[in-house]
Length: 159
Ligand SMILES: [Fe+2]
Ligand SMILES: [Fe+2]
Image (cartoon, rainbow, N blue to C red; front, side, top):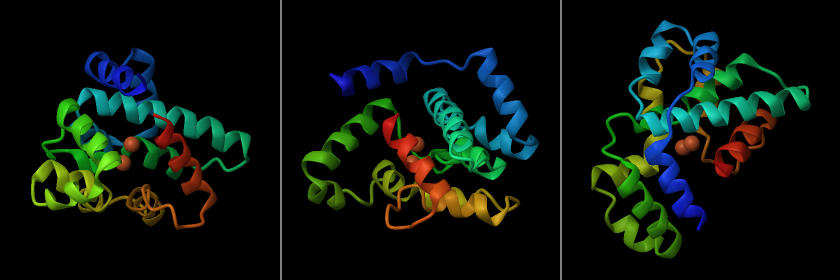
């Protein structure tokens, strides 16, 4: 049921004016160009994650503008990935039931991007500071002990 909801939400989601203001506030022009290449559903996901990351970081006294920027940009490795709402749902489900089969499809671009979008993102981020790159590169690496990274991961997994 949750997956179905998430799927429908991904098709119909749209950025609000408030979301656009939020993006304008946190991203510079180059970063906005990148952000705008994301699919609408990914933009909405990223803003949701960033707003909640902001809130949690304030609660924990860990506010850092780099963390909010990273939250907005964390999935930009999915730009030009060939991932869409439908194949992403299939890949996510396959990853749950049979990661082995999915690994065999590794050479197919959407599958490759699904696994490697954190590294791919770094190739787009030449001018960003190193901590933003660190957060984005490791947003699916759950072995690292970094409090701000943990906030990003926790919120990202929820959405
Ligand atoms: Fe991701
Ligand atoms: Fe994400």
